[in-house]
Image (cartoon, rainbow, N blue to C red; front, side, top):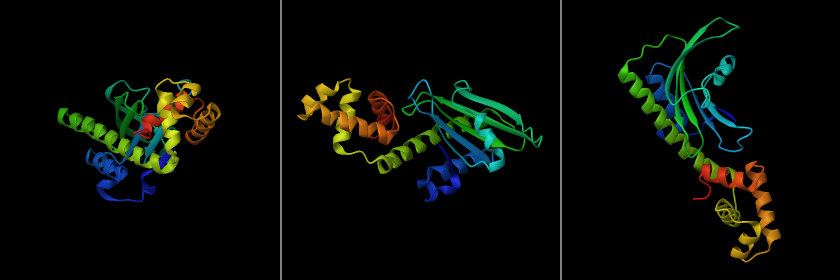
Length: 208
């Protein structure tokens, strides 16, 4: 999923996209890439990416990821083949979170000078970005997926390891009804199993 900062409707601190971009700009970077890897499915990781890169620089999204950067901060430079232009940047990998591995990258077309105080500011900015985006994700998820009260109940029990028959007994409904709700949830969340549905729903804050 790619989302541009420019598409955000709200403004000011309530808009995490603009808030994070402003913070990254104070660190000398024109562009920012926030990326989070969904924890499921494990075999085919999915990435959610938010950035403000122009069309000609979309390839830079593939450099700083939650997978190819060790925990902590990494500085890098990149030469674009088509233009031979150089770009400098940093990536902070935040490690496993409720939403899977996450990272924030700042990118500039000018060389970056970094001292210890700047390093500390970059890391703090990355952690703040993760908090802001996690809150926004939870709010947007409730509005997007629109799970029913019963679907949430079924997900909670599935996440607790209960079988369809056990959940049916607990909720005093038929097992077919439980299977119907589980199928509906999987379709809404684009998950392949009831376990991955429960994990992803918990990650999005839909079960709280």
